[in-house]
Length: 114
Length: 111
Image (tube, each protein chain N blue to C red):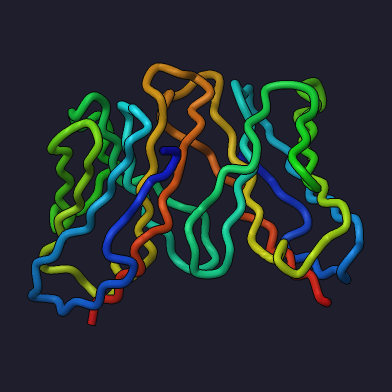
């Protein structure tokens, strides 16, 4: 299995809602990532988990809360989002400890905040 | 100046044409990645290069480490090749987790 899966594909939520994005991989990768991508821009790194521990938080607002319950799963919990948080949220994974850092991306969740 | 520069920003071609997208970088790298993103879609890793040349089907990627330059070539282009192509680098002196991305090249192949 060489795939990163993400659910849901699309999500529409209000500013008072709580929702979660899910990401799964079964490639044995021990590093997992969340990216945010706005239209016509490259992805921006949000969080990195290494061996299920948060390794990098790129100063992301606390309304985004990541969780890595096990080595295959990565969640992003959303609460009290703003309309400007509407974007494509991409999950990725990679082997741990490689300086080459080849990342495998999922198809993304298209989030719209009303 | 961005550490990774791509050219052109936009490229329109007719089906069957040979296409070249260029990427220049200004820092030491351990690897260079070519990524493809179809409109509204996720990102697919096409190539990872640290030296030389790689080929996969109609796609060829080359890198010249001395000149800090890489090219992605598409032979016999097809409308399904229409996508954004992104060059990204893993920095030699940097986090093993971070990629530095170019701004992407939007390729449109007309039938």
